[in-house]
Amino acid sequence: MNWEALSAIGEIVGALAVVLTLVYLAFQVRYARNATIDQNRLTRSTAIREIILATANNDDLRVSQMKSWGLDQYYESLAEELGITGTEASRNDWANAVYLWMYWGQWNTTHDPKDLRELENVITKYLSMPGPRHTWDVSPVGKVFMDEGFVEFVDGLLAKHSI
Picture 1: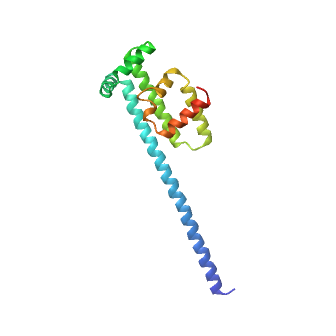
Picture 2: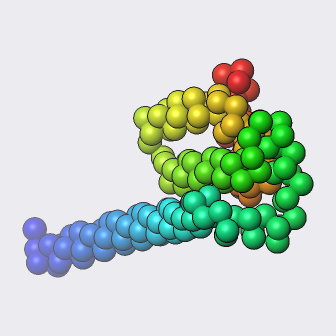
Picture 3: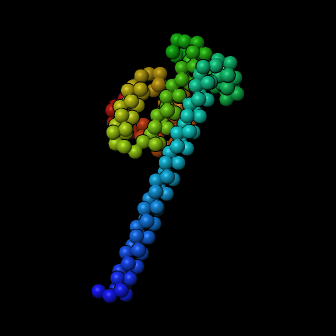
């Protein structure tokens, strides 16, 4: 074999190495992009949960929020239905919403089948309880704020498990 043939083979191998490197980098960029998107969702979910949790834990903040959102009547009606005070009804409803946002964040960033099975188990058990289920189905701080994909996922679980 002469030097020109070896040089041509070297160029082909070098070009192939460049192509493989570019393909690898494309996969890495895609992975990094997806990881960033997932982190953004988790950050957003955490921020929403913190706001809701602060509202659930602070009666003055929650009452002013209820008034500004026009939810007084809703919580008075819920309180009467549950046999508790309006403050207790709103506190409970907002606390349930914290869990829903936590599950939303997990669902949006979970890709492993084992994690999805665990999430399915937790959500079905959580929403089998009357208070959380009411927050999911009826509450103005429940599923109305969730994205359509998550709502379909959860409603599908509830139908699947006849809850």
